[in-house]
Length: 529
Ligand code: BG6
Image 1 (cartoon, helix red, strand yellow):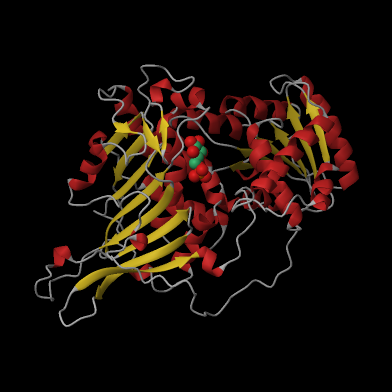
Image 2 (cartoon, protein in one colour; image 1 turned 180 degrees about the horizontal axis):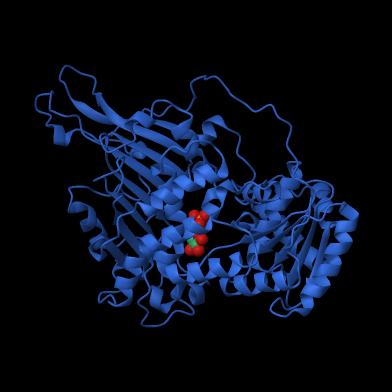
C-alpha cells in the first residue's frame, strides 16, 4: 500500500478561541493518598501545568493526607523531585525546558500535609480545622476531595467525610469528590458502592474519573463526528461493515501483580477505558453539548449492548517472549502473581449494539499487556463498493476504506481508499490520507489530568461517569465475568509476550470474514513499495 501522507499541511482556515484562560474558582484540593504514586506522577504535575497555564486562582490551596512520617516539608521535597524528573525526561508529556520556579513556588506555598490514618475519625477532625482556616482566608469554602487511594477506601472515606459534615454544601460553597478507578469490580459491587456514596453525596457532587477521557484525542472524537458534515451520514449500518477498537500495551504487569492478579484485563480496561472509546464512536448525537445530555447518550449506548455471549469473548495470558527487543518472563512468574494464575492479561470481545444505527454491525474490542506494539486506535471499516466495475479486480480484493483514529501514540487520523496506480493498465492500489496532530498543533505539555482536574473545579462533569453509566457498563460485561468465573481457561499461557495475542482472537473475526489490523501498523503506515 502506498501512502499519500504529506509532511506539509494544506493551508486551512484556522478557528481559534480568542478567550483569555478562564480561571477556576478558588478552592482547596484535599488529596487522600497524598504520598502515593498517582499524586506524585499525575495529580501534582497536572496542577503544576495548570498553574503555568494560568488556570488556578490565587485562593487555591492543597492539603495532602497520608500515612507515614511525612510532613509538609518532606512532601514538597518529594513532589518537587518528581516534577524535576518529569521535566528532565521532557517528551510529549512534560515540558523539557526545566522546572518553572515561579509556577512551582506558587504551588508549593499553597501545600499542607496532614499525617494520619484516613480510616480513623481523628484525622477528619484535624482536616475540618485546616479547612475552616483555609475557608476564612479564601472567603469561600469550596473543597474538592480527591480519593487517590485503593478502591476499598472509597466508601469508608466518604462515610467519614459525611459523618464529619465535610461534604455539606452551603450557599456559595461547593463540596465535590473525585473517585479514581476501579469503580467496583462487577455489577453488584458497583451498585453497592453507588448506593453507599449516594446516601451521603448528591450525584452532582461525584466525579468518577476515567483517565481516557482526559486524552485530547478521545475528546476530539466528538469534534470529528459532530463538528464535521462529511462523516455522520456514513456513520451507520448502511455504510459501516465493522469497527475495531484496540488498546495494545508493551508493558507487562510490572509491580502491580497484587492488584492485577485479582483484576485481569477485562475488568481493568473494558467497562471503563474501551467502553469510553466505544461510546464516543457509537453513541447517538446528543441534543446539546451539556454534560447530562452527553452522558445520557453514553448510558443509552451501553444499555443497548446485546448481552455478550461467552463464545464472543476470548481471553489470553502472556508467556515468556521478547518485547521491544528485550526478553521478558511469563505472567505467572511476575512478582505477587500466583504461579498457577488464571487471570487474563488479554481480552478480545465481539459486541453487538441493539439499535437502529448499529444493528448487525460487529464492534470488536481487544486489549492486552506485552503485545507487539503500543497503540490505541479505533478503525472503522466501511462496506465494499457494491459491485466489481473494474475487470480483473474483483470487489472482494479491492482495498478497504478504513477510517482510523489514532488515540496514542502518534495521534492522528487516516482514511484509506483505492487509487489507480499510474500506468497504462487499470491497477488499483490502497493509499491513505493522513492527519497528524503534530503537523498542525504545538505539542501540549500535559500529563492527561489537567482538563479533568480543571473540570472538577469549574463543575463540568461531562468527562466523568454518572452512576447509571458505570452500572450499565458493568451490566454489559457481567455475562462474560460470570462465564469465566465458572470455567477456568485450560490453555494459559496462550500467547507469547511481544506477539499480537492468542490465535483464538483472530478466529473471533475470521468467523465473519474479518481480520484484525496488524497491531502498530495501521493502514496509514503500510506501503507496497
Ligand atoms: C490503567 C490500567 O487504568 O490504564 C493499566 O489500570 C493500563 O493497566 C492503563 O496500563 C493504560 O492507560 P494509558 O493511558 O497508559 O493508555
